[in-house]
Length: 129
Image (cartoon, rainbow, N blue to C red; front, top):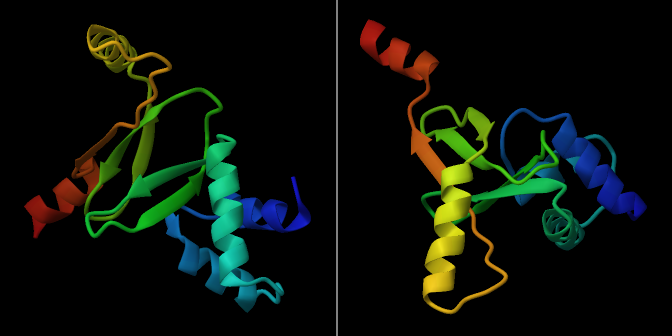
C-alpha cells in the first residue's frame, strides 16, 4: 500500500462507524496531513477494491466507509438512527445469490447486502422518551 493509502486506512481504523470521504479528509487535515480530497477518494476506492474497507450507500446516495473488522465476506446490520453497524455472515444470502445468478446464466456472482433497522440502544431511548 502507498503511504497515503495507509494513512487513510489508519484514520478509518481509529474511527467508530462509517465515515464519508469528506469526514476522513477533514480529520486528516485537522491532524496536519498534507493530502487532497481527490487523493482520499482514490485511496478509499482502492481500499474498498482490495477488501480492506466496507462501503455503504446512505439514503441520500453518499458512499461512507469503515475499516473492515473481518477479512471474510460479510454483510451489515446498520442502525438508521445512530449508525451502529454489526458485521454478519449470510450463508443463505450467498446460496440465494449463486442460485439466482445461475438461473439466469450469470457467473462470477458478487453482491452487497445491508440491512437497516434500529439498534436496541436507540429503540430503548425511543421507548423511554
